[in-house]
Structures are given as structure tokens and as C-alpha cells.
Amino acid sequence: MIRVPNPETLAYLAGIIDGEGSIWISRSRKSNGFQYFLNTSVYNTDRRLVDWLSSLPFPCYTSERGPSRSRIARKPIYIWSVSGREAQKMLAQIIPYSIVKQDHIQLALSINIGLQGQKVSGIEQRIRELVYETLTKLNRGGDLHGEDT
Image (tube, rainbow, N blue to C red; front, side, top):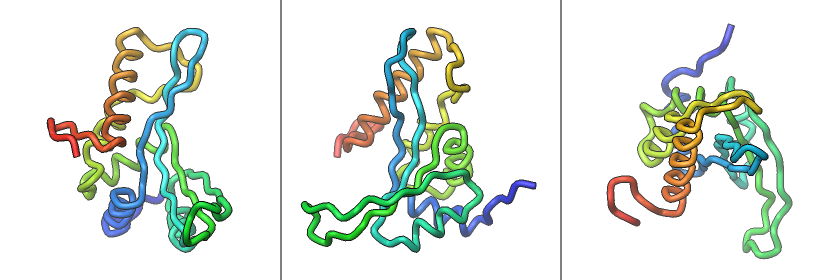
């Protein structure tokens, strides 16, 4: 039986993703075009947050980066990430609670995440490219509604 977080947990997760999270699509060149992969992550200097995120019922990857010499605080950075179809499942559950990343999530949910190596039609390839470009623009401070911030 799959455990589904309660609404309060999903709302808190949405707030963390809104404030501390990133939603992006990575792209890599393959012999027959590009491969696109959905990623969601949270970087934080407090390990307790990443430990809590890891306790949620979403398959995830966690890691730690040592302190950077260029960072004033020089604290370790803890990373929690969910990718691919699992990221889509998680994002679908938090979208009702998201405020800041609503557009990001809607874009992430608009593409068909296939199995790795699965061939896709030319139309699906173009849709993925458009979503990739639009999400990249959003992550650089753009706005889907005609206002750049």
C-alpha cells in the first residue's frame, strides 16, 4: 500500500518547494535528438529539513556538499531530489498548495515522461523542447504572463 501524505504535509512540502526548491528539465544530446529529464530538488544548510523530506513517501536521492570557500557561512549544503515520473507524481499532489511555482509545476506536468530510451514522435519531441525552453525562462526570472521580473 502506497502511503499518501496528508494535506498539511503536502501544503508544507509545497511551501518548501516554492521557497527553497527548484524544478527543471535537464537535456542531453542523444544520437536521435535530445533526451529530457524532469528534476525537482531542495538545497538547504539544515540537515533536519532534508531528513524530513527524505521521510516522505517519494523515492528520492539525497547528498551533501561540503562548505564552499566563497560562501560566507561556509556550512555544508544538503540536497534532496526527486526525478522523472516520481517527480511528476509528487508535483501533481502539491500543485493545489503551490503559489510561487504553480507555472513551473503545470509545465512539468504537461509533458509525457516516458521510459528511458523510449522513442517519441516528432510532435512529442517538440513539446518537450518547448517545455524545456519555457521552464528554463521561468527559472531565469521570466514570467509566463508577459511580465519579466
